[in-house]
Image (cartoon, rainbow, N blue to C red; front, side, top):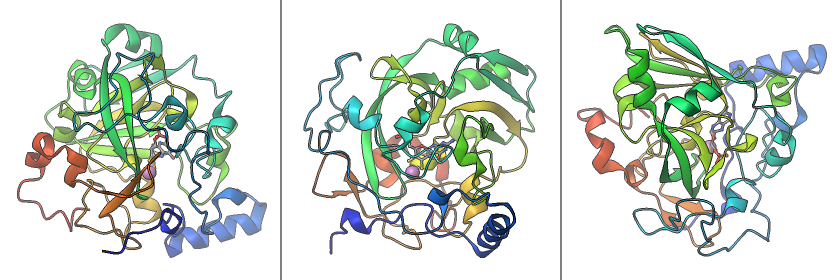
Length: 322
Ligand SMILES: Nc1nc2c(c(=O)[nH]1)N[C@H]1C(S)=C(S)[C@@H](COP(=O)(O)O)O[C@H]1N2
Ligand SMILES: [Mo]
């Protein structure tokens, strides 16, 4: 097999379908709304800063002390996790998100839980933090672009929040929405995407014990670049499913359309399970570059969480439900 160089990884945003492309061009011509950083030019994936690259086994100082995941892979450093981010509400440049998101206000913050539930409600982040006991979960995060990290999250099971909301029997999916506020998130002025960022899970996926609402990492509260004050983490799916800075959670009957499904439906499906056998239309998913390492690794089916989640997809053709 020919190894793929990191310089050959294609960012998620390079190709957009014709409809979105035409819309983007039209709006750009009309009012200069397009953000230059979101133009569909090949934005190469930058290597992490020299100071953080190559850190072999970082010490998890402020966390419970876990230095590896359950496979023995070392956790990435706090430096790496907080300085190499995808968060298109700020910029498509992974190394500039941290700087641009630095002053993003995460208080006050409320999350509206509604739709097909018996106990709808609007909860402040303080309510959420005092209601749900948090634990550390060390998970691999595999971006669809072909890079990955190991992150010691602090959070609680999404199932706990859903149980409190008490879904009605007609609820089949969970739909999540990120804050829509272009003054605070300037990337939302880009007409390349249909904002706000939306993601979804089938209800049984959402109830799986691995699905986490993270409010911290390395034992500290989340920084804005990682999706403060709360974000989803679905470790067996490509990173884009793990929606950041959530303000709305709805139980719904129909399968939600995510931002990435709307942008490029032939490239990003609803399921987005990590799968080395199903290639992205523009690149293979067989290997990945772990941030901090030079040699590429084999990508694992369901990102290595098959024992916990494979049963959710029994009888499904995973090439069709990509
Ligand atoms: N709202 C929102 N959530 C998002 C994204 C985004 O652009 N906006 N990017 C996703 C992608 S592509 C990845 S790989 C992960 C990255 O999470 P991290 O920066 O905390 O490592 O966040 C996901 N969640
Ligand atoms: Mo990603």
